[in-house]
Amino acid sequence: MKIFRARTLQTLFADSWTIFWGDWLDLRVRIPQVAASGLVSPLIYILAFGLGLGSSLDQAARPPVGDSYLEFILPGMVALSSMVISFGGTTFSICGERLFTKNFEEMLLFPIHPLAMHLGKMLAGIVRGLLTAGSVILVAILFTRDVWSFLHPLFLLLLVLNCAVFAGLGVIVGLNVKSLESVGLFNNFLIVPMSFLGATFFDPSTLPAVLKGIVYLLPLTYTTIGLRAVAYQPLNEFPWYSIPVLLIVAIALSMNGAYQFARQQD
Image 1 (cartoon, rainbow, N blue to C red):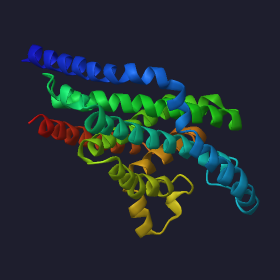
Image 2 (image 1 turned 45 degrees about the vertical axis):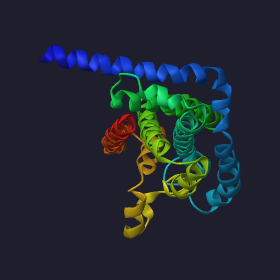
Image 3 (image 1 turned 180 degrees about the horizontal axis):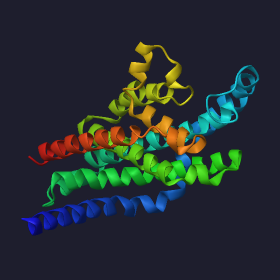
Image 4 (image 1 turned 60 degrees about the vertical axis):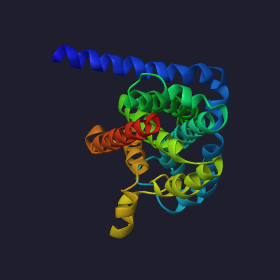
């Protein structure tokens, strides 16, 4: 029984890697483009909110963590950029294969477990998110001159989990939308609101109970407060609950994604 399970897991991993490698062959020639594509919005937010609005806020009050409002929002910018690219890149990739190049139907004919298909596509989305987040981390290091805070193992773990959550969500959306216009609707009504409500620009602990309940329903909130704690607070103040929350959401999305792939195969 143990041998059978080991072989099943080995096959699942190999099949997931095969699906990922197909996307990687296309992605590797566009690494600079992918890394830079998600850098524009965070840079605008950093300039407008961190340096512009932040200079006024710093005179009025001290941020909950960090030495300035700019430092306060930098971990959120990393989370935000990884979310946008992990979701958007994965969704558009699957939409392109389904609606235009028609490579998607060929993939469905492979004798591969639906979960492996989801994991392979999700891994490609994680890589996209990490490439862009790496660019934002470089900007954050330049502003703070603190390398270790943004390269701490816990920081990177949360970042990978965040990419997994939104890449998994991107897979599900990509499998169900009927056109590229529909992707825009998901982006406008899901990703954009989460960008501003996911604790990126504020401390959620200061909100009224009702608003706090809404904010803590968003996966991005757990990533942002976790990254912020790793960067600026001692380890005993780290919100350890953020890791299992993101992990559970990623697993739930993977199960749903596998189900969606199974329906597509049928």
